[in-house]
Amino acid sequence: MGVLLGVGTLIVVGGYRHAAGEWLRADPVPGAFVINLGDMIQRWTNDLYHSNLHRVLNNNSKVRHRYSAALFFNPFFRTRVSAVPTCLKPGESPKYPECTAGEHVAERSRKSYAGVA
Image 1 (cartoon, helix red, strand yellow):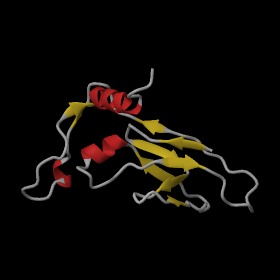
Image 2 (image 1 turned 90 degrees about the vertical axis):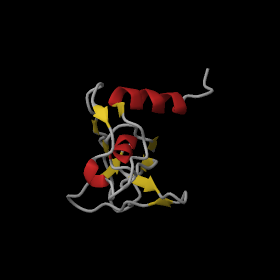
Image 3 (image 1 turned 45 degrees about the horizontal axis):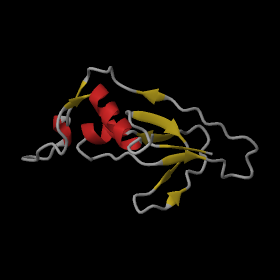
Image 4 (image 1 turned 60 degrees about the vertical axis):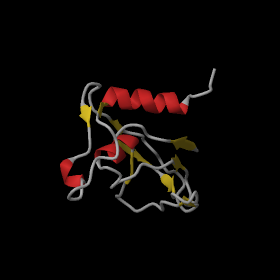
């Protein structure tokens, strides 16, 4: 089982953890994908969509093999990241300051590895 916290935009994997901390099953649906969003989408959508901790697990004993292929989409390092205007309610201000994709990834890496020598 692998556990991931995506810093990018779009991550295609398995199950996820609810905001309350409970792991929720993503039961297999033939021909379907489970899509997990990274932190950058949360920033772009001004918290309309949230990223979440997710993991890959074969939780269906009837299926002998279950495959997970992580696929990451991230913008160019210098792409400006700010709240998309259509994700802001009238009169609402962005919750996050504008930054570049590279600055966002660097910030998330610093937080992830804080205190690690």
